[in-house]
Image (cartoon, rainbow, N blue to C red; front, side, top):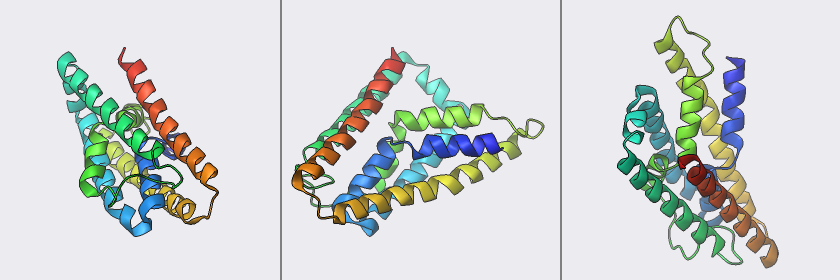
Length: 196
């Protein structure tokens, strides 16, 4: 169980589309504005895990044409987010946005987030610590996962908010935006490489 907790922590703390977008919303719009997106991200993540645990994700992803459609949607949306962040110019966050991404955006992101599927598959197909009671093991894993997931994402939202409130030089802000955008594009690249 300790190995599972360690794996959850390190898989979640590393930047992926969810945490980068959460931090970007915090930077651009503040902590409270990011909570709606985060709630959608949480529910979407739970549904994503249920799709992986039930095997439905494996069945759906085994259909080549549907897999291609999901890959194109994922790559397109993540590239769009990367562009929005990179084009923010001298203000950390998203531009040109008049309102933050909300609950529905957070929910939708988890369905096309390649990292979410990789994390769920890794954690729920591996790290068996209650093999005699697999249903109880899944329940315990869900509780442990969310006990780490929620605080980690709240910390990313807080970090984005703090970063957005700093009076950083415009060049520094631009470098941060480009760095966040490149991180998202790395996820896109990994998703494309994994699909080949």
